Image (cartoon, rainbow, N blue to C red; front, side, top):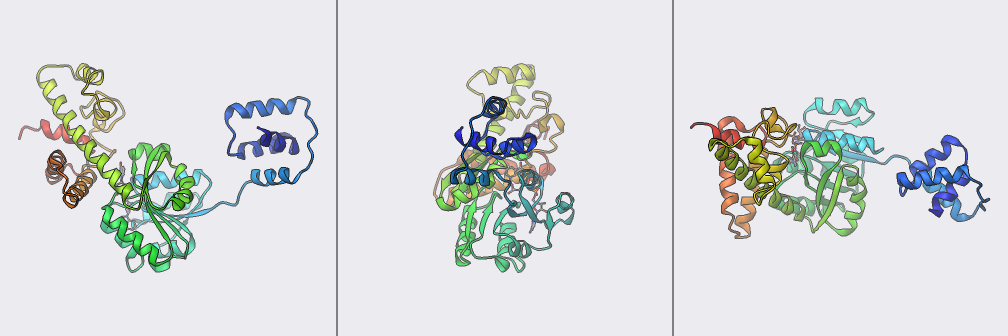
Length: 359
Ligand code: NAD
């Protein structure tokens, strides 16, 4: 409170005061109104001390940091936009040239290879479909490692094999740079609303450097441990999500065929022990929850193909660690069959539609 008081008094005078107050990171709506009220009251003179000067300097707008962003698809587009809103400058690249256009229109610099991104910035976020794409973007002929500057922090938010994250981390260390895996949960809506959960694997010092940046796109940023642990947490979550989505779909199909009203059945599940995220917030049966993919012909959301990929990663990890995951294995096979039958681009809740097909 004392810090705000000093800055407000030193810069008393309409908009300037207000802008400075806004730029103080610690301010909340409640203490803003308290501070504005204080300005209208009798205020004691404030000495110009070294501390006050430092506080004023801290309140001045900082030059914008420039960050690289590679992979501007369903997720990356929204995440990048939130960084622009947060005041960062961006250097962007996507293999699909149209993806960079909205960023160029907002003042970002678009370049034509990952190497050129790496030459211009010392923090890079990647959001790519799968492990081979990450290997290509980091270590390909025009990849990040061909142009990287010492001390760069690399943050990969793609969902990939934890062993590939470890491989990239080792290559990063060879170039005197740092790599973190930071996959997300929350989907396209959370990416748009900056409410993602980041599961981060990497060194504690790097986490401190990454956290502020990630907070512009997130509701939760969790440090899971060493490199690879973010991916481990992510694939465990998605395996459970797939299993619970299949279970919910089976039950919604069975119940409605037994003559139960779909909304009544969902209501019973959601006040009983069968309740889960898939039954309550993302119900796969069309018309139960408004605004989710099942109520929009399974368009948008999280693609069946991506879910099949994540379940494959979970199965690789199960094999490596000799873990028994029979339900995860079955879920993987079911989503694979769906991909082969043309469901790949539909949201993963379309397993309900698939189960209702009279085969
Ligand atoms: P997407 O396919 O929509 O976007 C990927 C982007 O990467 C595309 O714009 C593509 O052109 C670009 N790209 C592909 N190869 C590239 C290359 N070599 N160089 C540069 N750009 C390249 O995928 P998405 O839905 O944004 O998902 C990205 C990652 O996030 C995936 O790993 C996915 O599993 C994960 N994820 C997705 C969701 C979701 O709901 N979509 C949720 C959580 C996590």
